[in-house]
Each structure stands twice: as C-alpha cells, then as structure tokens.
Image 1 (cartoon, rainbow, N blue to C red):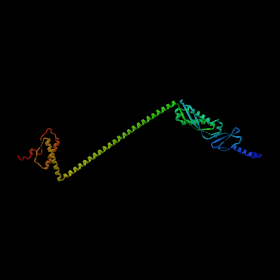
Image 2 (cartoon, one colour; image 1 turned 45 degrees about the vertical axis):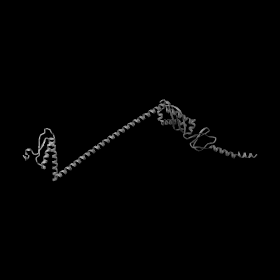
Image 3 (tube, rainbow, N blue to C red; image 1 turned 120 degrees about the horizontal axis):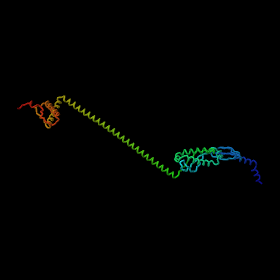
Length: 337
C-alpha cells in the first residue's frame, strides 16, 4: 500500500515532463569537435553542415548522416605493377596525403572516398609512368609526383577531396634490369675514376712543367746576377789596379823630380842594363865592348840602346851579326898602345 504513493509521485506529470525536457535537450544540442563537420539530414534529405562549436538540431526529426574529419589524412597506396614507355615493368608503391574540403560531396558524391581516392592514385600512377622512360622515373620523381597530384585533384573534385601531395616510396625494376643498371653504374664509376686520374696526371704534369719553368727562370736570373756581380767585381778590380798604377806612377814621378829620386832611377836603369847585357851575352851575337865610361848618363844611354836592339831583333839567333854596343873601336881611347 505504501509503494503506490511512491510510484504515483515518481510518474507524476511534472517528473515526466522534466525527464522529457532533458532528453529533448540532450538530442537537440550538439557539440561539434574542431576540424570535424556533421552532415545533417531531415526526413532523409540533406539539410545542412554543422561545423565546430555549439549546434542545435530538431530532436527525432534531424539526424547526423555523416561525421567527416577535415584533417589531412595519409593513406598507403598498395604496390602495383606499371610499364614504362620503354616497356620496362616496375613495381611501385607510395603514400597519398589528402583532406576533405567539402563534407557534402564527400558524403553524397562517393560511397567511400578513401577507397576511391586510393584506387584513383593507383590508376593515375600507372598512367603517368607509362609516359616516362625508366631513367626518367628515377631522375624526375618530383615531376612524377606533381603530375599524379594534379591528375587526382582534377578527377576527385566531385568528391570534395583535395590531394595535398603524393610520395613514391619505392620503385623496384626487374632483377635483370637491376643487374644491367649495376653494371652501368659500375662502368660510370670506372669512367669517372679514369677521368679523375687523367685530370690528376694532367694537373701534376702542369705543376711539374711550371715548377721546371720557375726553376729555369730562377737559375737564369741567378746566373745573370752572378755574371753581373763578376763583371762588377772585375771592373772594380781593374779600377783598383789602374788607381794603384796611377798612384805608383805619380809617386815615381814625384820622386824623380828630386835629386835622390833621379839617382834611384839611374840606379834602377843601370841594374836593368847589366841584366840586359847578361841576356845579350847568352842569347845574341852582339859583342859588348867596354867604353871606359862609368858615368850614369852613359850607362843609361847604353842601356836604352841595348833594350831597343833587343826589341828590334826579338831575341832571335838567326843570321847572327856582330854588333858593337858602346863606343866603336875606332873611336875608343887607345891608351896603352
């Protein structure tokens, strides 16, 4: 009997109304997270897109048809086989980065936009690889990625999808092509090594030639400097000798002007005359006869005559003739006869 009043109180009209209001408010108020979008339908028809923040819907009438993330998403593109323009089969995989820019198109334009954009990336990649040769796929990977992104964006525009970038992870050619590429790379490395070696030899030869040239130039300059110094030394020596002779002659001349100097000169000339007579007696047929004169003037005159005679005959013994030096016999003093 006591339970009936309690149930009556619980299920009273105010309590029921309060519970109903709470449920309605809970279903009517929607808090949309950041970088997300709610697609709202009313009676099965698109009504609006609610973005981040506080939003309201009509309970039991409006419904959240789709909850779309607006963040950039990364999806692995499965590996697949593709044929290049030069008929080389490649196995290629990659990563696709995209985001939803239109929640309505992503909801109503395609059933599964992630699957759709992945398949589109695969087909586009095969198409772009078919336009390029094998070498270009390795050299122009950035160009290939750009072309794939442009082609996907053009095809995925009705889906509300924007592809940010596409990155090829790996390009794997057949084993036979790999071996040929390795041989080619090995040949290129050998070629570069030979070129570098030849360049090194050429540079070394140039350096040696320049060194030899510099050595020859320095040697020539040193020899030139040596010759200049020797010439200057010889000139200085000649000047010094000439100066010494001039000084000696000046001193002799100064001494000859004195009485004692004249006597010294006469004595020197007399000594030379005696030496000349000894030489004539040994090497010539000249007969030296004493003239009985003993003064210095006579000796000097006689010495000069002997010297001139020797200079004229040159000391030769050919056609020896008797020559009298001094006073002729006819004019000599005949005392004692």
